[in-house]
Image 1 (spheres, rainbow, N blue to C red):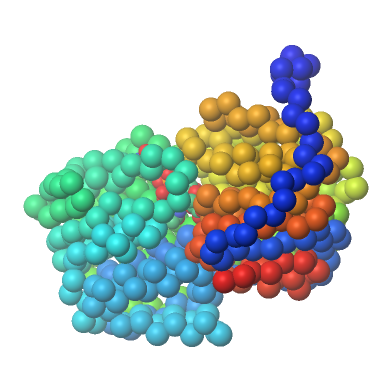
Image 2: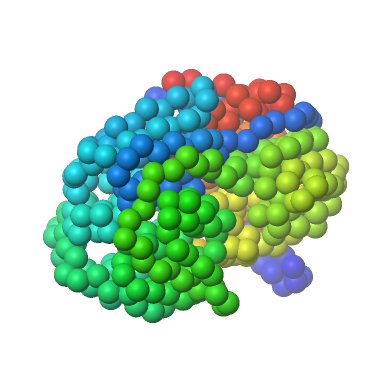
Length: 445
Ligand code: EPU
């Protein structure tokens, strides 16, 4: 951080006396200061891998079993969506096993209310086109973190021989004649890569996706598709090569562990001056995040073969700068948590968000807690403060809800967080895991 940038930062007075608590309408999380989180904790399956893997079952006819499925609300929404298309589903939330039978699946349109519940609903499009040659869907909803268009999906479906008509509230897509192509993505979009891979698995010939997203969740999708019988390879640089097959078959598959939940729990250790061990954490997929924790001065110990992480917090965390980007860069989904952590680090940190254009809303909420954060377009500058103070804040998206919980564990007094449905969409009872490590957190529904 140059002296010039540091001097340009506005000095915002710390809030030592937050406004008196108002009555909170609707469900909320209550967090009181919880220093020194300590212990060992398990992980849930990865939400973003699960959602796309669930849509990939549309490509098969028969009964598949998915294991390690997180019982979070987005998963329940996706179950509803598949049931709406004619699939049978049984989800055991004790064992995290989801059975889906797609034998009688015959629908190809998704109700706009379901589409609006989450962005991942757009991932039905590729599989529906592959299986039925048609798809009718509303425009996807999800977190308010930017414009989030789906032009890369549509443009490339069109190149593969799909006619797409946009009506005011509806996208109507029909296969004219599927053709394999070399598809060049302008940006390595996770969703577009996944949608195109799924359509290409049942498209004759060899499709190449160049400048593809290389997120671990994309590779979890590739792994299940290969188990179904798909032929998929990768080539340098960032190219996914799919050779179409006639048919895919149902599978029994275990979903990868959630690197974002792991990141949240390790940040909780760092934030509270604690010591947390996550034996299942996929450290080999969390390199940039773990490197930044180390740069701050925290001790990071990685298990054998890159699985399992222990984080022991330093008492004097240093400011660091991060820039989010496609994997293996710093994940945008851990940006909010990292911002919470940096609010009390010594010095000035800079976060550049390059993936979504409007993903700093949590910063404004943290300033209500006494954090000093200045946001200019896609750059947030954070001047570390000694203390945060509990007050009422609002979560605007899944990852913001987590970041505000983390800030609440550090803050003096009580922090109440509304917008809890985001928390429930993204995490399976994360509040219980935090409690098992010593956090004082309650979800009021
Ligand atoms: N984009 C376009 N046009 C497109 C597609 C994407 O302009 O057709 C832009 C987006 O607006 C965004 C950027 O490209 O600015 C990246 O979007 P991408 O398509 O990569 O993201 P996504 O598939 O919509 C998934 C995750 C997100 C995660 C991003 C980036 C799921 C269900 N969602 O979204 O997860 O942040 O990749 O890694 O897999 C979350 O879990 O909280 C979450 C938002």
